[in-house]
Image (cartoon, rainbow, N blue to C red; front, top):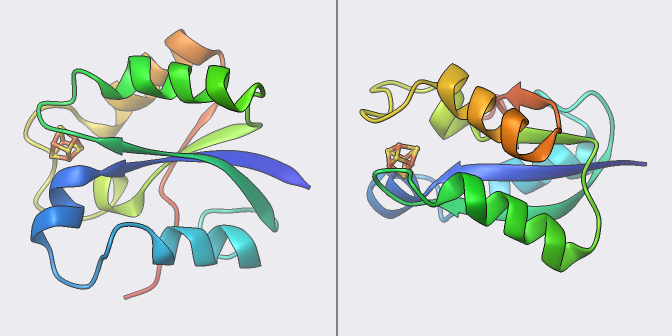
Length: 114
Ligand code: SF4
């Protein structure tokens, strides 16, 4: 089974309705729905905090603690797909920084649930 990590927007989790922090991303990964191409094991869920300075090193640290690297990192849909955008980085900038730090491909999005 594919192993994935999810990077989510802490600001969205704290201030937007309908997201307690993870369940839609985890459901999509479990069922292989949305942006997950197949049923996937989540080995890390990293919460970004404004202004986004810690998310890249924390993601690398999460992989070190897990003692494994995932096959892909998914930027949560609340980072990659919703409006208004993150005011600090584009999804593409997050993806580039994460790929450079970890060597793992980044997918822009997780779920398509409302
Ligand atoms: S920096 Fe952007 S992605 Fe990260 S928590 Fe803040 S708004 Fe969300």
